[in-house]
Length: 194
Image (cartoon, rainbow, N blue to C red; front, side, top):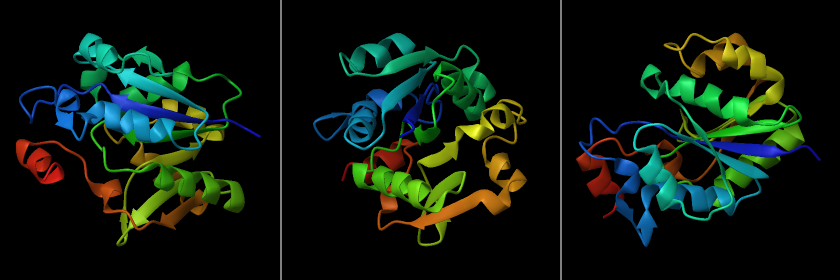
């Protein structure tokens, strides 16, 4: 059985929020703790958290959780640079990577499990959860695409991968609007914590 790794992108500077959003309270924990706990409670094998801005505070907040870290010093170059940092942390024999945004605390473990199950059953290399015809996270990629991802244009980002290999994309319908909701602004945060 090959290993499914999670890469959680937690490197951004939260410029639109005005303070580090990942450390804001969410339920009983912070946003980033909630995201990591949901992933740890799913069927992923191991978790890598990509740090950047405020890396020491974010790392400290996660305490003794069983995750690996990588520090993306180039996080200001965009999300794909963090994905690549995460990929380079994975062992060569890793089977898949599921990409999560650190500011999406509304993705329960069941969504992750549904994406992994669809990958195992359907054998597509790129699996994307969909809610109401809109694509969300986590995006699962078979690591046969590791080199292709590392060579993508940083500005185009990871979405370019599915444009290069449209025949290898599987959409999985999930009944969970949280796959579409990320917290960028104070208004987003207020809506998410109502």
